[in-house]
Image (cartoon, rainbow, N blue to C red; front, side, top):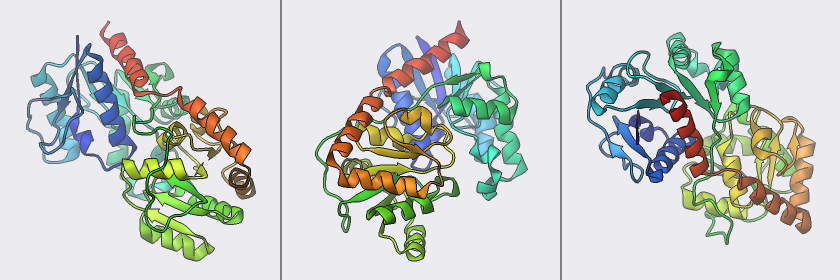
Length: 351
């Protein structure tokens, strides 16, 4: 049995794709029965995924970087792990081997103008050094593999592509109660209001199609600014839980994702798993994830997005076909498969 340690402090990441990845991946690995999974440094108040063990404590410098550079390798040695997995971009630069690092995307490296708060040269150097220190890098898409290789100068052959998947709660079915004030028809976006997400194009296209917009994960101030500037009907749900997300996915006329850059796009597979029609940008990793399940448009093609949204609202046959296409595509993604592919990476390093 392989004994794998991972950075358990990643379980305390802000709600979003990284925390979802850590919980789902290591829970799926532990459920297999042939991997012992140990959370190193997880905070005492964090509930671990089923089957995951809490590792021994280890002292470190009192910063996040200090923990990763000093505490995590100490904890890995105390736990006597066979392999250490750093699942969120940064990793010890020295210590137990072999070392696997997951890098979900490098948009902050390739498009730094979107991330003024990440221009700290020490932070960027740490990210780059972590990539080069890894014995193997895992990323979510072939697009990200190529971006990481170009951005950090690492051999593409050392980067394994392991796609993400929807959590088990994301299934088709009868929609639950929607938050107050939200009525059909509406289109849905899940994620923050970030420049790369291209939300203004979504808002303008939805207005042209006669649909309201629900922004799950957006702060209300950003939503109000978008609505006031564009005379649009926008609802913001800053902290939607899974029950709310499932109801929104199932009720939406379309999940619209005009993002200019994604390393994967986890909400896409969540939407498709719920049978939600998808309209998305032909950019980054998105074509890999969506496949033939929905139209892929230039991120700036406002008219194209509006036409696609309007068709799904006004043509029941088109909407039904799109729902079927989403479900068919979603069947390609599952956390047991993601865990199996990750285990293949581990075994390749340990053989």
